[in-house]
Image 1 (cartoon, rainbow, N blue to C red):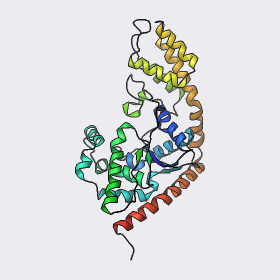
Image 2: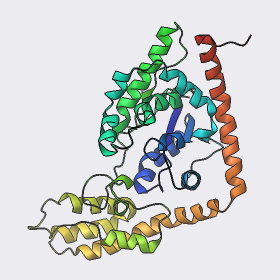
Image 3: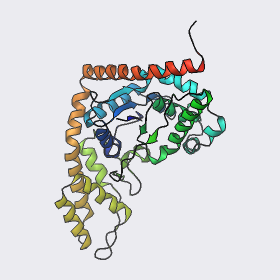
Image 4: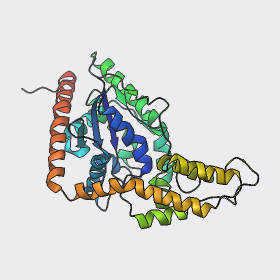
Length: 331
């Protein structure tokens, strides 16, 4: 059984892209691996240093994880800031990370361009914190997107460097978790790219979203002027709508609109209305569960405490070993 580590930043509500991407794969992993899933509230400060409601955002992500099926009995589900050992290991890794290699990280350069007035030290050393999150549990696998591959490579670099500098084999070198060909890319509603809050609120459908809001967003989704000939290829915006339809609708419904498109009789308004209702039907059980769990503070407190205790059991041993290896010992 491999150790798997993954986190998500509490910068907003989870959406269908998160659900069909990370969360569905988490559900598969939790039955087969020793999983550590955490809410990365430290990480969120690199881009949102003065959050309006950090605690509320953390709670929302926690609730939506649980409502989606993440089982705290099967996995270690915790909040990053509940693990002070992470901050200590992050500090130790910073001592052996070099300015030049951190400045060359692609995501750092991109973020620095997007937020020129907030190029903070935490943004620069983000890879060190990510590495601490992973190697503190001696993870073997990490489910990451394409944009995080460089960070994972740096995690391996930091693990190798520590082992080499102190002539030990404390940290394994984690690899990307391979989901094979089963990954589903959820397109956004803006006509291109993937679903995500960073592309704008109107681009994503959130798990806890009200039906009225879902209808409004879907009806505003980008399309085109319609097919120009029978069986013509679909433009990217229209193909995106059909991709969403295939995920939430019945095969008969999908086939009906495929036939309508291929025969040049399609009415995008009808397609959007059907898509909106099918998304509402799909998300309704999740929304109801989110409301139920969100109101149960006693249950949430229990989940968080159990997760923190389990995570600290793993993390404390790793940091204790690292401290002794470096030379920090009590008199």
